[in-house]
Picture 1: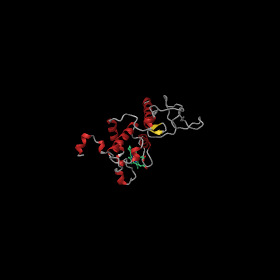
Picture 2: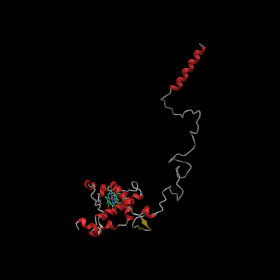
Picture 3: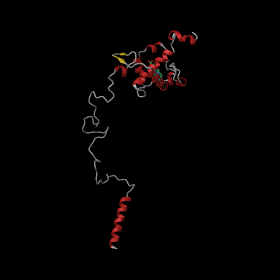
Picture 4: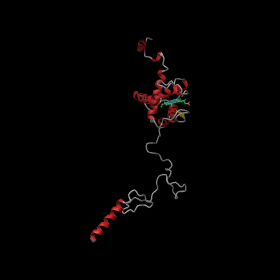
Length: 202
Ligand code: HEC
């Protein structure tokens, strides 16, 4: 009987201590028998610090630090610049693959406003965005590719930026396709090879 009471009491205590406090919230930290490395003295990102004069735990990277893959030392490719001027032409060979890449991206990102042939008659025109310009005037035909690259990268006035949606190579590809559109809408008989003119009835 003595043993029974002892075992009974032990069972009640262990059941209550294991199950009895489930769901209860405590204000004190739990008792940790083996804390492992749960608690370490460290700073958490964007926390406060009394140690540094500016009160922040985050430190500025050393001057001149460049994130991996972000060196951008090719001014032409990354910024469309040639010294202080806008660069003319393309920083890579203009191949049919590049133009096809550009056509795909143009149709996704630019047609809604600039229209399938770049005349500014995209669907948004009929919803009120009437100021989208046509590519087919001398100002945009003569504009250096580098300046257009800057427009697509950073946006201009009412047009948004595309650097977060298109890689630098894709932006150049879109411009190559823009040039194709400009050429296609401003062609003369001289552009058609002699042999093909007959087919067009010329
Ligand atoms: C949401 C509509 C919209 C989309 C999408 C859009 N544009 Fe535009 N774009 C405009 C508007 C509006 C302007 C005129 C901005 C102004 O003058 O305020 C413009 C102007 C331009 C210009 C002329 C800039 C100048 O110097 O006058 C170029 C070049 C251009 N866009 C290229 C592009 C290309 C390339 C894309 C696709 C990557 C694109 N746009 C996507 C609305 C758009």
